[in-house]
Length: 83
Image (tube, rainbow, N blue to C red; front, side, top):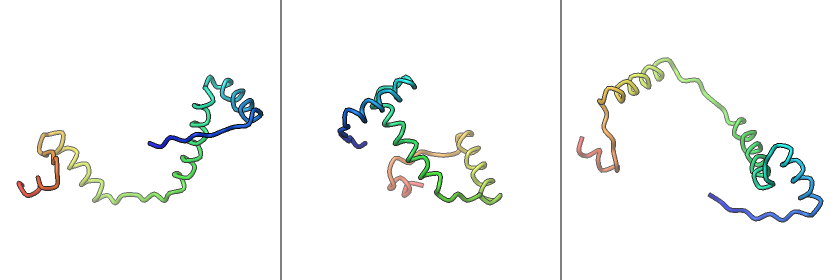
């Protein structure tokens, strides 16, 4: 988590405060909302790929194995040596 300190002019703070209060937010929460929207717009540009039917079946089987207790939890990579 990063902490950022920003200074606004009185005019900027007034506009932000007005917009934030319209939404029921503090200035801090409103600025976080704006930044979050920007990040989301960037993330949505990432390409997505459709899984093959074979991959979907493998995932479904693995999930079912997990639900049926057929899986084990590895706490560290060396746990693989015990299998």
